[in-house]
Length: 122
Length: 473
Image (tube, rainbow over all chains, first blue to last red; front, side, top):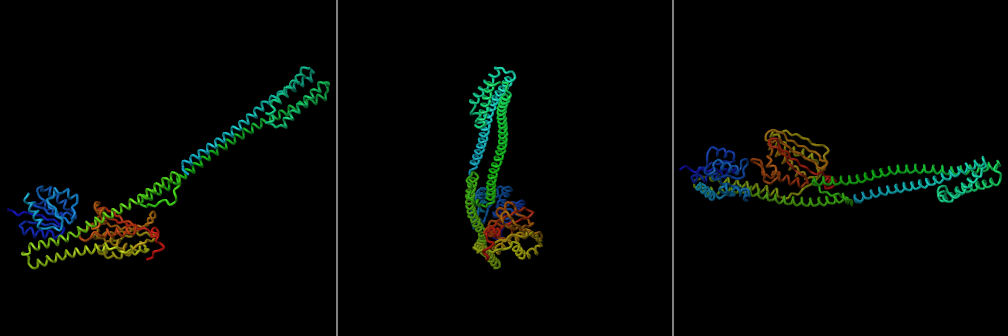
């Protein structure tokens, strides 16, 4: 069975680095991006099983990533992480489209559980 | 006095004038009528005298008794008439002339009687009688002519007075309406000035006590409205301040959560992959933790620094000198980035009353933003000018940089908002805004993507703040 693939987008480099280390340890294939544009380019080339993205980024933000993923691969789950502790009303409205929300600081264990669930439901 | 009352008064004066003119005209007409009646009577008397003279002539020519009796009858008739119209004649020409007329008639009657007794051929008597008759007739005719002249004079007088009063009424109407219109115009101009000033956010009242007319009522209402608006504006400012505290707190949370999350993830991953790490990797992990801690420390330090209430050291200052000083501070940055500077500083700007250090901080912040927005090359524009309408000076700092997207413009003064990719705490403009507001000034921004951004700062003159003479710090 081919490895499950995860795309991680966050303008904080440590988030991508740590996610890559941790998820690769569990046998996932991980690609990380520091902002939205190259991530969208990459999505046009290939499909990932799960996309984990930061919400607030310069240029292409998490919402645009979400829209593009849903357009290109309607079945792929998107997990959103954000440094905003209080979930905005506008984000609440997106709950149906987003598989999960994680406010920072993120518990990696919880994130892994969520990713696993997203794969299982696929 | 109310405008309504002024108009009533004007109308009353007009009606009074017209009634007076009418009464005068009526009186003149009555006088003319009286005179006219008298002339009719006098004409009758004159006709009688003429008949008497004719009969007198016939009597002397032919000596017939019929003519003599005719004279006697005419004399009696005249006497009777004179008695009947006595009041009319006295009223017209006075008692003296009436008596004289009566006397002359009496003389004439006596002469007629004497003629009848003596010979009618007596030349002396004849002559006397003729003379008396002639006198009587001339006197009567004179009175009539005099009265006709008087009627003419009265008509001319009436005509003149009507003409003059017509012009008087026209003039009065013109002057009075002019007065009212000017009065209303002045008051309305006050209302216009007042509303203009309110629309500029200047809630001054019209100092003088409003007049008691309708315009006064309007001014009172506007004053009340201005007061209410002022109160509302304060409430809005207060609620905006509370909202911006909310924005600040959300911003702070976001800024802190990122490095916190980094430390947390480093620690979690470190524990998870510990066995697979060599010594170098472990040191690298800990260094990254330390870097993120340092990041937190800087954020907290900056926050405390900005939050610390700073005492203002206000003093009189010259706008252009302040601008020249900050130019010296940013000159190195301009040289490194190869940016030209274009100055348009107005002369004769009023003195301002500021904390020079704080205003310099704002201007350096603006200039730095402009330089960073342009990158390499370009032109930094700094202009100063006087706004006499508001008694304020204006400083404009413009760049030919990449501009700010319209959706970001509204947030540009929010804390932690930044469009800079790497550096930038997002606090510079927020702090600048606070400083300018504390100086009772204003700061605004216009921007066009691809064309450039301009910040415009306004500061009140020391005169407007009433600080030109005192408060040297």
